[in-house]
Image 1 (tube, rainbow, N blue to C red):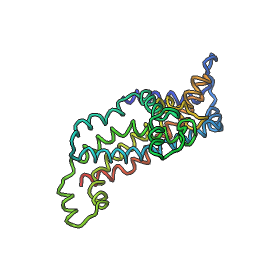
Image 2: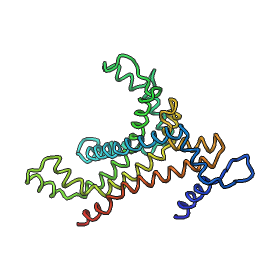
Image 3: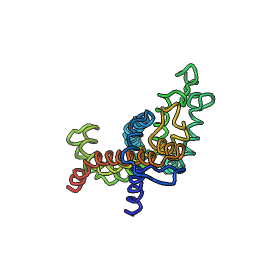
Amino acid sequence: MMLFTLYPVAYALYTSLHQVIVIFPVEPFVGLRNYREVVTSPYFRQALVNTLSFALVSTPLILIVGYGVARLLLARFIGRAVVRSVVILPWVLPGAISAVVWQWILHPSWGILNLLLYKAGIIDKYIPWLTDPDLARLSVVLAFVWTQFPLVAILFMAALTVIDPELYEAALIDGARAWQRFRYVTFPHLRPVTVVLAIYQSLVALTSYDLVYAMTAGGPGTATTLLSFQIWKETFTMMNFGTGSAVGFILVVLSLVFVLAIVKALPTALVERRA
């Protein structure tokens, strides 16, 4: 397993330090030149900002929505089993299919969202969700949250079911409010799985490609262009595997920074959980 993980990273590092262009027969060592070309490009800087904002906004939203849905699905209501089965669908659908669904929902002329908002009197004209830069960023975040929250909800449900109800009863007797019960009873039990989910979802967001590309192709302009798009452009459009690998290795380092920042809380969470 380590071979399948480390070899691609090592090869990407090797390629990023060489001039690897398809039409050239040799691959001379160029040091950090590929990295200089990449980081001085305005397209890379825009993609970096877009990727960071996409991950930093979508990851907390996924955790919050997932927790809310988990709480809802643990409640008793008619048809709960059916709802539990249906709620997993957004996660199992391929990204391209999810993109088609959201393009239909957000279409500026006949999209269902504009129709509902117009019928409700909230808007007086249809909104171009995917052609306005700010709205396009919001749209891809919402679509990404929709595709990812089911897994989070399922794992939160599993974690919530093992919390001893007597802890909540004791907290109620002590006069704890809802927020205090969440802070001192619920969250300490959820913290380990929350850390794991935060790591997983941040990595998925940082490397996201299919959903966003199928929805907006990185547009309008470069409004939703992510680093994953930049890797594809450098490698398969410019045919420069060196700069493409440089962007890829930068993304690896960025992912590692996210993981280290989140996992910093994991040892404390595990110790408290065992106690």
